[in-house]
Image (cartoon, rainbow, N blue to C red; front, side, top):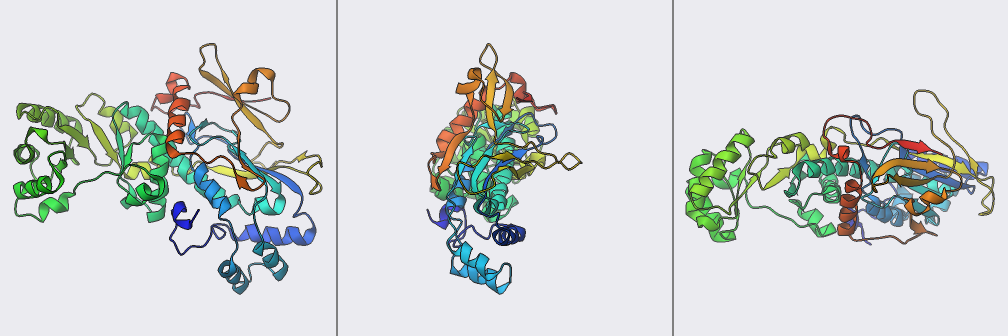
Length: 442
């Protein structure tokens, strides 16, 4: 796996510096204090879903596996840490041979989650696990937020396809990750070529308003595009007058015109008028694609409109109002030694202000009702009840430092669709509400 597969510039040698300064100072103190080798269990979870959201979506797991595999302190990284006096010599020596050798379990990517769900469990020595906190949270918080927004938009869109087109609305590297997460959440294509190259996501795109404006007339622009890209292309019809543009578009491509795109105005009204005009011109199979700052609410409002596909940018890549999931990475159990047989002792943060956590190495299962629909997220630290043994959610992702659960992105996408379909019908409601199923601790 090279760094290009992570969505990183090719000159970035590893993910080791995608971390916070204090992860390394904790390591130095633990090495000196004799606790670095203690067997530890960290868990990723969120104390609550974003306000108004009814479920979350696990996304970014595949990128986490790549990041852990590429977490290496090479000569350049060590030189930087030495120059900045971030840590002392013995710690630099320890980092030089760092390779994560522990185990990671987690919800399979694409699965839904709820408050308290142990989305990821990282086990190993305190030293090797604590270093991974920042990069894991960075990936999961971002990607899961995008996937949750995408999932809501996919529910609102029904069977109509969604195009991810938010690359120009976020950081260039975040755009690639956002495209991947959107695909997990139910989008079908992306405009971002880097995402297509790195993750195999289908890419689409034709032209912008600038292409029309550079020509002497709209007719010339449409003819040039059709001559180059064929009659099945998509023509942008809102640069000047929509009705006139639709007439010229059909004149240029004939009734075989693939689609027209509308990027402004009252989309509901304009879509109805354009559909009527296309049909009158004989272009009955020409599709209508709408863009223009859409979110899940705007998509839902267009359900009765003669729209065939939606293009979404800004609201998608910013999580549609919730750009993070507030996931945390907490130590929940530790032993007094590195001995794998040493008993684990639950530990937990007990501070006030809603930032408490529950100690202990956890399992999670989803209980179903008599109709096979999810009715509760059940989390525990003891033995798994027999009736839930075949409903457990965590799967092994890394064993002894080796990734064991890579899977194609289409498998992840299909899993999410199935997981969402297994929730109560109210999960698809866009109105603000509580989690669609409760979290129960046993």
